[in-house]
Every structure is written in C-alpha cells, then in structure tokens.
Length: 276
Image (cartoon, rainbow, N blue to C red; front, side):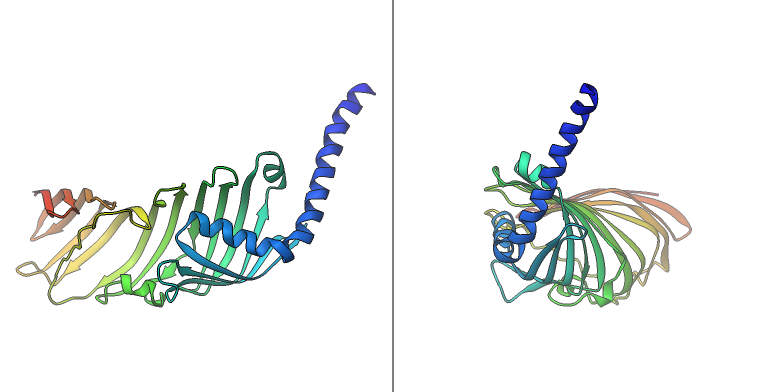
C-alpha cells in the first residue's frame, strides 16, 4: 500500500497541476493571453504581430486566428498571414521551469499557400527563444509580394521545401540556419548578371545561414557553351560569404568541378578553383 501511495501521489499531483493549468489557460487566453503572446514575440524578433483571437481548450490547445506578421521597421510590409494556427503548450514546463514550449501547426496564406510545423521554446526569464520549423513544398511562382521581390524574374518555375532553426537572444540579431530543397527549377535569362550588395556596418535585424543542395540541374544559354548538364553540389550562404563546397557538372564533353569562396565584404573578393 505504501508503494502504491508513493506512486499515486505524484501522479495525482501532476494531474491536478495539469487541470489547474488548463483552467487557467482557458480563462487567461481570450482576455490577457493575446496581448501577452504578441509582446513576447515582438520582444524577441524584429516583427510586429497581430492576433485576431486567441482561445484555449484542453483537447486542442491554443488556437490563434487571423494572424498577421509585419516588418517592425516598416509596418507596411506584410510578410505572413494565417487564418488559423494551433499550438499545444507544455504546461508543466511553463509552471515549473518558466519556459514556453509550444508545438505549432498552421496554414499560411501569405507569402503563399503552405503548411508549416514548428516547435517553439522560449525562456520567460532570460528572454531567449529558439524555433525549429519546416514547410510543405511550395511553388516559387505562387509566392506573393513582398517576399516575391527576393525571387529573380528569370526563375520561371520551381518548387522549394524549407526546414530551418531560428535562435533569438537579447541584444543580438536573430540567427537562422536552414536547409532549402529545390526541385524542378527553370531559369531563363539571355544575359547572366551577378550583383552583390556588400553588408553595411551595424547590426542587421536578421542574420541568416542557408545550406542549398543542387541535384541534376541543367544550365543552358551560356556563351560558347551548349549546355551544362548533371549540375549538382552544395552551397552554403552566410552574411559574410558564399561557400561552394563542391559544384560539379558536364559541359563540352568534359566533367568539371568548382569550389571556393566569395567574400561578401566591402572589398568583394572571390577565391575559386575550377578543375576538369
């Protein structure tokens, strides 16, 4: 009996804490929760976020409706909209560890129609936050402004799926590392031009790092070259540099390999090695 009591007491205590937390969330979410959640996100990221309504049920968790995310520096730039986002909170982590842990699923309308899944972990005391997220496959030509401005007009078609991790700490730019999987890309351009704007001084509102994997590409229309086929390789992009780990292909009946770095500094420089 003593053993049974020793096992039941912690279980009952956890159940009561869960029930109390659920009741508290049910009452708190529609009254104070919306403003609190908006403030927590805006303190950690350079965004303005608006949540139409916020509600809670024990079987569904938090339910956010009519979510809009704008650029904090220019609120006229609407980056993301979602008619509904569901989030399952870890109430024990919130009460015992003062950490907000959420499992999130939502359907985006802007910048494009897509499904997104995320895990959010935010410290309420130290104001840190890290987010892991992934999207469904997206047609690049369906991406709407202002995000569409980042897609070259020569990129006429293609699909992309993104998985990424975001870190945010006080007094530092958010840091983003991720993987983008591109398929069925088509790039049409008569004259190829490459322009880089060096990063200016001062802290940027965002700091991103991206790993791109290219597989079975074909490049046509280059001067004196019929086509480059079987294009594949890995490219890493950071605020400081573009690093080509290994980009291989076949042109003029010759296999070739390109590797090296392009430094994105005020004095733009490149160190590339081409072998065939």
